[in-house]
Image (cartoon, rainbow, N blue to C red; front, side, top):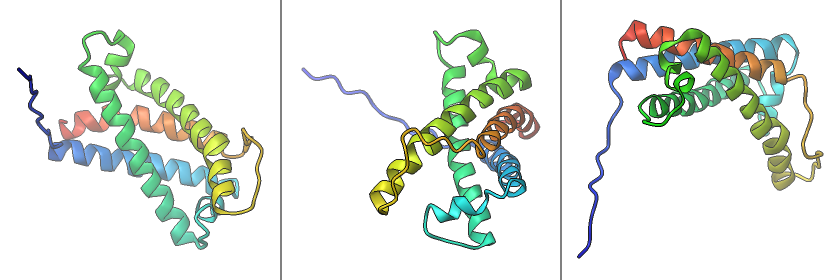
Length: 163
């Protein structure tokens, strides 16, 4: 006798979609602003062999949207978890805990994308060899700020839109 579990797909509400889009725009603008201020914005599109300011900002916002979806989905999942530690369960409702968790998320993103992802990607696509881990410290503050802004604005916009 076999046991089958039914799967249900929960589509996000309109309020959740607005929350994700708003947080992604605000966090992406802070990330791109810091990269632009430090002269590192063109490196985003250069990874894809593109150039131009429009491509730079478009890629920043696309990447911001993807990272925001992952952060919010993980936070929402953890907030409903039975054995989730209380600080992680409160991230969707607390600005300070959201900012702290977002900062940690920014560090994880920097490690995964800049320190290891970009060198492996460029080694695969081009003949350019970068050391592992790649220490591109100019982008580190941008990732920290992205995570902190993402985590802090998520509870604020979640409450605003009623998600």
